[in-house]
Image (cartoon, rainbow, N blue to C red):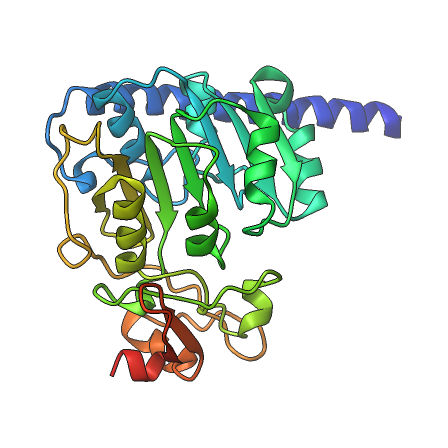
Length: 303
């Protein structure tokens, strides 16, 4: 009887999961079609959330509706269980192919047990990403340089990893920036191959790079900055040969403070610090100017 009930409830919850996905997809499809008909929009106008953290699903649907994507392939790293991500809707709605990476074996095992893993063209691999291994990992998946989208969110060496990527030239790049570092200084955490956000500082506010640093790197790599949304989490870049349909911004004009209040206290509990309160927690930690290589305490850079 217990085995029978276990099988029944397993099938019940699988069916429930499918039905939830179907309803989310139907709503997302309608919003994506609406976005495709908008011209010269600010990214706030087109954001919506199906599987993404904030409005990334809508922004990405808008961007791909305005430019050609001959090779609908994505690479996303730092996906955790991939239930919340920037590319899951692309995978399911647009039938893109993709590679997702995460450092946790349990997260990758979870993805491989999800129904999407047999139903869509997705490859999930466990990897702790560094500047030394990222090109080999991506090249092992695809030899195509002109892929559709790269999403960078590893809560750490994001700037240095994107800087090191040479094997692909995505049409769109999405990067999470750290708004604590401000909108005008080109700052990043110093590169440390084994950096882990939760171990670097109890607050988990010390990670990544400033929006200005990413804009600087994007320009060097041949991308225009086409904006953020008011949530202040991700920045969006489009290759310069394709960016004509979009408004472009400087790091200051396109900067938004994060709405997130996900900081933690010394006991590991959420502290709910707002943007203006976050710098004090990590003011004594070092940051590097990505242009000059100079290193100072964050308090010195932002004073």
